[in-house]
Length: 139
Image (cartoon, rainbow, N blue to C red; front, side, top):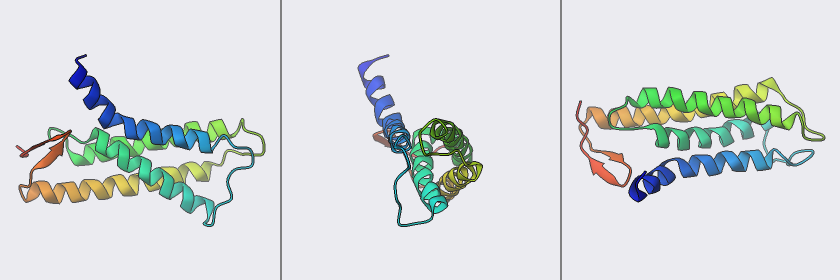
């Protein structure tokens, strides 16, 4: 892999990977954090951000934004399952299947919203961002 390709790979996937690592660290604290909102709302918002970062990493001019949204939602949902399994091993934490549903729902809602916005832009012939370059979309 060339230096430029490695840098592009880092900037494309690095934010999503760092955010997923942040979720892992936050779920490692015994007892869990005290939040000012309902736990399911917090899960939806947190994994919604992960879904957005995964969608940005997966979206390409040659790929349907809807396919990127499905992949982002599935990957975020899978990370939610891994996170809940991890929490089941942390003292004073439990694994809740409804947390996984909130994780997947938040990630899917944000990823599909981003796909909808991208589809409108593509339909209007606007250029799409690909990495650090802007290229016009070609069907």
